[in-house]
Length: 259
Length: 265
Image (tube, rainbow over all chains, first blue to last red; front, side):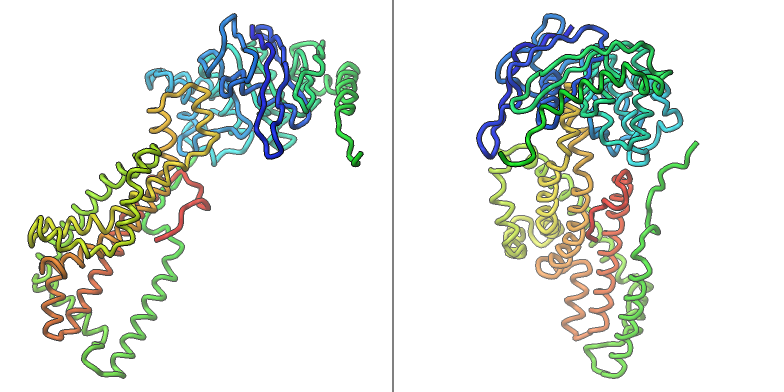
């Protein structure tokens, strides 16, 4: 279980301090798929980075199974928006990177990496370099690399937002399929309402300036969802939840005209 | 299985045909100008190449050439090892950079030959002085490029490594160093050309040995044909040395998408 309490973060901007996060409290249950949705500038990525241990909060704390988090740790693995693959390393070596860092012997880590390459549907691409793969395939590598270290929590920072629409849809389906098998706890940042609802058990809606949690919406859509993505997206329940989110998001929009 | 990434070699250079064209045109113009002018200090290209052939066949040039190339290899080798180590240290540590910066730029602005008498005093009239001069000619470009290259690693990759709690050692070997390779190799390519220059200057101004000695002797006889024959040989050596380094570069950075290759020689 992840307990986030009283997280506050300020950044020094050109026009004084920016309140990125203010008093954020959040509990993430074990084996939960939690999506975090919000307009740009709401601090959702900052929140994820603090949970990842890549950034320190100015106040508040993050507990994982009761232990305070101050830095990255083996129970968490991250998937990045820009994939963050080593361009000089083969797909195999990229997937094995997390294991290599942990000192797993070559034979063992490569066996594990091959397993995951098959798991994310990239068999045959082991010896290729990242730039020879499409964006969607590159992000599968990013996902396989994170899964290879068998994390307790998967932290995903807008992982599909750099992809085109069709690829994104396919990867959403695949991520659902993978999650249904592994049931790893996931915190998934997105700016897409449909994505948030389709994937999540709960959607955390954040508002900007200051960044805080506006609302947490339950998504009671049936699982497994990976086999019936199309019918889910046309269902009434799905429409109701996204409509609700949209109404909430709309009220957060800043006025376009000067006041 | 898919085809392997092609490893670019000597042949895969788009610039090959334009290079050949300019060489042929220059050679033709030279030959023509020399025949028309008919003065002793511009010998026709044909005569020069003939002289180069004679010198080679007679074996007169071979010992000198071997000696020059040995000095070049040792000098460039020392520059690579030492220059890379210093560059890495400067690139990774602000303190080391602050400590050494001033010397690097001082040496960079000083005419390198000023140090010739110093080397002469230390190592005498032998290969030692020449090698030291080669190192001084070449090493700065390696140091500067390597130091700058240490910042090449994209922030995103460093963050990724941090998210896995990677130790500094791993971050260096798996991220900082490979990311630095294109710029480091660009430094080697400039440095190898400088090393050839250092070699010739050393042979001409410190110890009259190797090819430099031949140039001086021929110059004293006003033998322009021999001087230019050796000049051509030196250009060929420099070109081959750069090609060898360039070949290694293309092997080591084969992962670079072709449009991101660092330009230069």
